[in-house]
Image 1 (cartoon, rainbow, N blue to C red):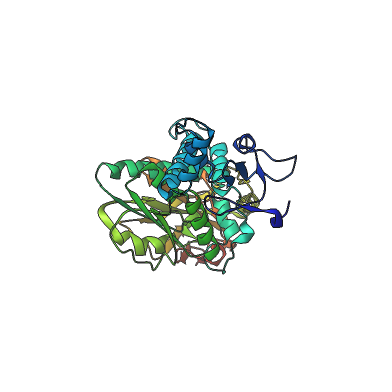
Image 2: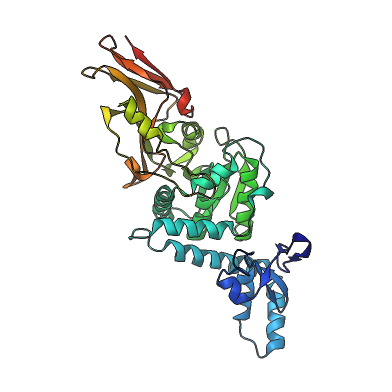
Length: 410
C-alpha cells in the first residue's frame, strides 16, 4: 500500500497509510509477516491515526443512550482541543508508567528503554527530517538512547530532581540542552509534573524537527517547546530551576558538555538543580598490547543497533588518577594531564581516559556502566625509557579523542 492510498486522520490531519481494526492496533500487529504495521483505525467518524485513538476511546467511554447519541458525543469530542490533549497525554502517561514501572526496582532496563523508544518513535521515518550538518548527526543521536543504563539512570536522576523541586515550586522552569531527536527528558518531566514547563535546545535541524513532531503527537506542545539553537550560547528568558544536559563522551571529549555548563549553569537559580551534578575525568597509562585489545572492543550505538558493549577490565600500567572535574561550581575550560612514569618498564604505552558521572544524589555512572564512562585510548604511542620523566597531555573539552595532544617529556 503506497502513499497515494493514504487517508487523513479526522482529528489532527496526520496521514494514515495502513488502517486496521482497533484490536490490531492495540496488539501492535502487522498485516502480514514482514508487512506494514497498522497505524490507524477506521472508526464511526472516519479514519483516525494511532496517536489520536486514545481520544476516540475516551469519548466512547462516556455514557450514551444509544448508538446515535454515542456518535454525536464522539463527533463533538474530536473537535475539542482540550479534550484531545488530555486524552493523548493521559494515554502517554499511562504508557510511560507501564513501561518504566518501578525505576528503583529490579527492572529489565534494556527491554524498558527499547519499548519506550519504540513508543515515542512509532510511525516516524528518519528520512523525513532533513539535516544541515550542525550538531550531532540524527542517526547517531537516535542511537544514544540505546545506551540503556545511562538512559535509565538519567531518568532516575530527573525524577529525583523533580520530586525535590515539586515541594518548593509552584512552577518549574526546565531546560534540556542538547535534547536530540527524542526529547525524552522534556516529555517525561511534563508527564510527571503539571508544574513543569520545558525548553528543549537542539542545534541539529533534523533532530529539532523530529523532537517537535514527537511533542506535538503527545499533546504536550503547550508545555514543551523546542528551540533550534546552540546551547553553548543560548540565553534563557528567566531563571532556570532544572537544567539537564546529556551531551558527553568519555573524558569529556567529542561533545560540548563543558561549554554548555559554562553558559547555562550560571543561569540556574541558586537553589535549582543541575543534572548531571558532576563529571570526573581520570587518566592512566596502558600498555600498547592492552590498548589494542581495548580499541577492538569499542561499543557501537549507531541508529537501530543496541550497544555491542563489553564491560572490559583494563590492565592499567599506572593507576588512573583524577585530572579534572566538571560541576556547577567547578566549570572547566581545559583538561591537563601530568602522569609520572617512575617504575614503569621500558616499552610502548598509550594514554587512557575514563569518566565517572554523578547524575543526582547517589545515582552514579561509572566503570563499565556506559560508553561515556568506560576507558578509551588515545592513538599516540608513547615510548617510555629511563630518559622519560612524565607523560603530559592537554585538551579543551569537546576535542576529539584522536586530537588530544599527548607527549612523553624527557
